[in-house]
Every structure is written in structure tokens, then in C-alpha cells.
Image (tube, rainbow, N blue to C red; front, side):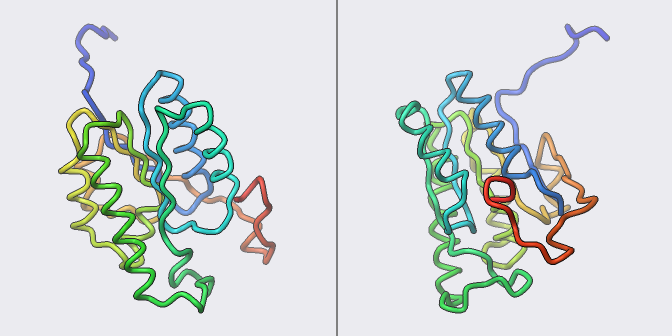
Length: 189
């Protein structure tokens, strides 16, 4: 193969989707690779508002990469997901949190201030009806041409695959939750 025939894109749209584990972990690995290359990275968290290990990890990294790493935690938790929704949080609160988080993600993706914007669990927000497919499409279309975008979560819309550059489907073979075991701290969250 003659690599002189290849060119490099200025930015890419990356999707980590599917039923299997590893979507957020892959995005965190991408974040590490980007920071190691002295990129400016924005990590925007949809859905997960409770204390998960990646929040601690990212906050600790911010001490080292204070100028390069921006973290925004939005969302109000699971929404209509296998009965895991918090009954104290109304659908209206979920919608507002998703909309506010989307607004922040769109602002940062359009700004040109970041080399990489990661929208973790945004696909879930779309699938659950908190955001529209059009919102997701606009995020892809309106991002700064120099900004790469990473979108994670289950159920990425098939009709938007044509607007992406890299799509990885995490396939679940087996997960202990299916056998009625709760998630393990440090492994699952």
C-alpha cells in the first residue's frame, strides 16, 4: 500500500455506540491521546450526574491540564432506562438538563477553541427523546471545521452514520447485570 496516495482530514467525527461496555472508556482513552498531543479537549457529560469514577479522574486531570481540559457535567441521570430513573426528577427536569448540556456542547464545538469535543452519552439522550436526531445532526454540521467530535452512547441513529468518519459498535457478549448483579465501582462506573 502506498501511503503517499492518502491525505489527512482536518477533523473527524467519531462514534462509540452499541450495547456493550467500553464507550465512555474509549472516549476517555481518546481524551488521553489528545491531551498527550497537546490538544485542547472539552469533555461534556450527558446523563451521568451521580458520582462516577471518571468524574474524579477528569477532575484530577484538570489539575495537570488546567489550560487544556474543560469538563462539564450535565444531565439528571437515567431517563426511562429499565426502571432506573430517579422518581424525584421529573421529565421536565430531564429535558431541561439535556437541553442545557446540548447548548454547552454546541457552543464549545462551534467555538474553535477546542481540538476535540467529547459528548459522552449524547446518543442515549437522543434515543430517550431528550434531544432530537436533528439536534445531533446540527451538532455535527455546525461544529468548527477544525474541531473533532466524539459522540458516545447506545443507539446512534443509523441515518447519521453517513455524516461520521469512524463508528465503533461495542457488542455485548455477556454482562453480569443480566444475571442480576449490580455494577462494580471502578469497573462499571
